[in-house]
Image (tube, rainbow, N blue to C red; front, side):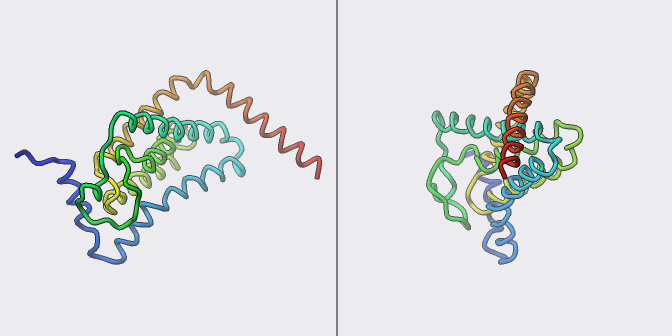
Length: 193
């Protein structure tokens, strides 16, 4: 019988779980909480660095499109999570649902990849991409996903980024309208105070 490379790699990564308290907690944090850095950074850019609002909107579109694509995939393909088989060590409780692709990781990859397409945000985009990879790896370590789930998330994020770049010329005017509407609303609120 030919070994399944997805399962083999899962056991190599997840096999490290449960051996070291500090490593387990670091990986649990990476699997669950790194995503909040992405949210905080988007909010920071929107409110403190208003010249990047266009880029923030594209990152948001990338994340949303990635999640929509994931949802469509789940309508046609179901893959059990490792603990549903069952196999591996589970460090984080999770609902028994399809594992492919990882919504969590797709969202992070989509945001980081969109930022990498903008010259002035490539540095932060590269950092976010590394964090996306670490979080994806941590989700395998924690027993939530197989490695192919994370690879699938990266593929979905790349696809959504490519689609948005194709539509960029049409989305920029829409973004402009949204940004002006937001700024006008904020200005009106300030006048009423």
